[in-house]
Image (cartoon, rainbow, N blue to C red; front, top):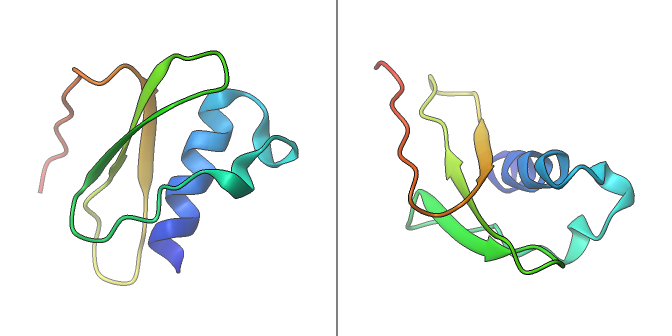
Length: 74
């Protein structure tokens, strides 16, 4: 639940609409992949990725584009 929630929260905030937007219909509840690509209502491509954190914590990062990479120290 928390992994899905943080991905939805990340993309809703990145879109700038917050939870007042159409975040309920966003399909970011993936389980086998750490990245999902989607399009916003204007057609821009976005990526949402899990942030590796310690057990008991969930985090996600959303940014425009699909060709970016991230690095988090382990």
